[in-house]
Image 1 (cartoon, helix red, strand yellow):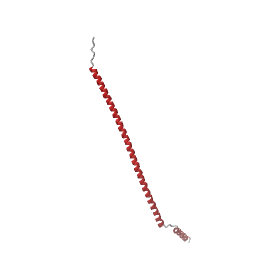
Image 2: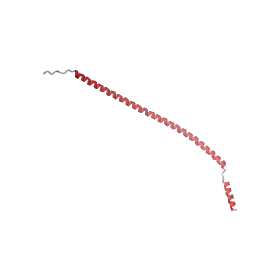
Image 3: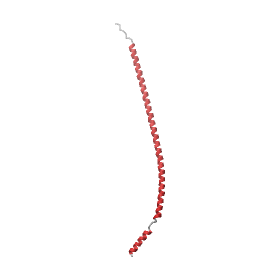
Image 4: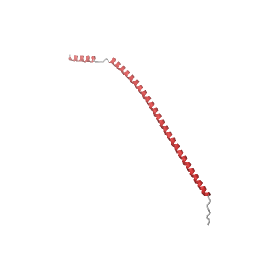
Length: 118
């Protein structure tokens, strides 16, 4: 008899504390689906904002790179012009010295020497 009471209580406890799994399970599935949809929409908005930020950052980096390249090229052109100016100045100085030496040489050759009278 004790065993039958024990089995009866065991079955009663199991039946009494059992959950209505079908209804609760459906409600949980619906809640999970709502949360998943909310999470998906928030992830999509986060992804789009990150994509906009990356596009903006890339365009700013490109603009900085172009500005840096332009400054470097302007500096290079200025250095080349300065070098050309110095080369021209050195060329004209050499031409002037060459002409001066040529004139001194021509004057020296055409000058008559005095004849010594003894």
